[in-house]
Image (tube, rainbow over all chains, first blue to last red):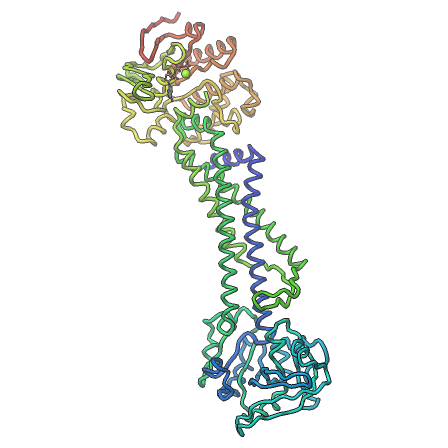
Length: 409
Length: 231
Ligand SMILES: Nc1ncnc2c1ncn2[C@@H]1O[C@H](COP(=O)(O)OP(=O)(O)OP(=O)(O)O)[C@@H](O)[C@H]1O
Ligand SMILES: [Mg+2]
């Protein structure tokens, strides 16, 4: 009814300060929700990217059971068929193959146990950030000598090695069951900001690794990246089944790195808590503001009830006032939220070398805008405001005219 | 003629035990169409309580109120609300008007609830406001009108929806005596010209003089009644 709208609108305009404060409260709730969501989303995206794209890849394929003990005698079955699928799959951006086994690396200064990874220099650079992580020397090159090796910064310190220095790598040869030793020259030193990588991994050329291990052309791991890294968290995709053939298992980062997955699950949880707290505070604020405006108008409600206004009409009037406050607030909140997200995204939040449970954020964090922030979140705030209006509206509708008129006289 | 409002053995108590206040006790009254009745009595005698019960704003503890021969107690909340809208006009001591609506909009309010078409509403409001001497002030908000003018708008609002009776609780109490007299004269005029039934309360002797029927109450009881023929 047109009358209710007119009354609601003018009543809202009546106490400008209170209206402004209420609108501020509701709109800030939405803005904060939008910003928190954008921040959390960016945080989890960056964490996932930092963790997966640094070295492991969004997803990996191994023979079933390989990951239990990293048994070098359990290589990927029929890798060529898999690589063919990866090559033509529309969701896949890049892939690479690796051999892995534990061995020793020795310098004149020290003698340490490491994981020796055989890689294809070129495709590895498409999947991981190994190439970008080189801080001294060079990345592997197919044109150079076979005996190139990349070591991490921490390992370099412990071995007291620098580019050009000689190292001996010892691996078990599974064909001859003898120790295979080769002399390498440090090609480059990488820094991934992770103790595990920087201390425990060395990279050599794949053919040489295969030869040392005596495994022919076998590989232990296929790592690949999706076009969009978020896809790797989607366990319902058909690609997992398509690649888990011949007793192989294709797994995304969620299964490969369960600690990271549960950490990111915590984000959703903390978003829920932040949202819950915001809601409780905002609901109390809105209820309070609505009640104040109703108490001030008790006599007025007594009069309009007396002259024949139905209680339902009063209920609708208060709900309409709540609705109007809400709609204005949602627009303002969405604008403030968007501006905040865009502004902080423009500035960027740099966590530097700080790491979150072992994952160093490899990028500057930039909050992201996404659809849910303009659909689900405003809808939740809308429901909240309407909910907060119901109680005051019922209260107003139940005013007894005789009492209301008596009180103020 | 059938009474517009009838009360039978009406009683209203506040509190209980030692603090029980009989605000109204065994009140039998009949208000006939066309009356210009004053309910008079000292402060606290129960005038407001009586008017509120007569208008169905409050529920009696004893007895019944019949509005056009129908017992209020038999009406649902909505029926009673609609009955007040269509048959009873109210004027209170002060702050009768909805502050955010103009004089014209305040008058229009009840007709809007009744669903009367816009053109008719407008015509009736403007005619009525002219009748109460507020021509040209239709668009003013209540706070842009004097107390007397506000009460005139209240009278106009009560009149314009054409109820059967107007109940006015000390409509002149907040006005200076001359303004109060003017307002009462205006109400009396509407009573004579249009036959509108008025019941109003007052404790001002000068105001009482204008009434055609006086109902004296004290301590919640009717203690006497006078009728005066109009000259
Ligand atoms: N809500 C209430 N609670 C308790 N007592 C009440 C209430 N309303 C009225 N009373 C009491 O009932 C009695 C009648 O009150 P009422 O307001 O009807 O008197 P009145 O004649 O209108 O007085 P006044 O001329 O001052 O307006 C008074 O004693 C008053 O104190
Ligand atoms: Mg009174």
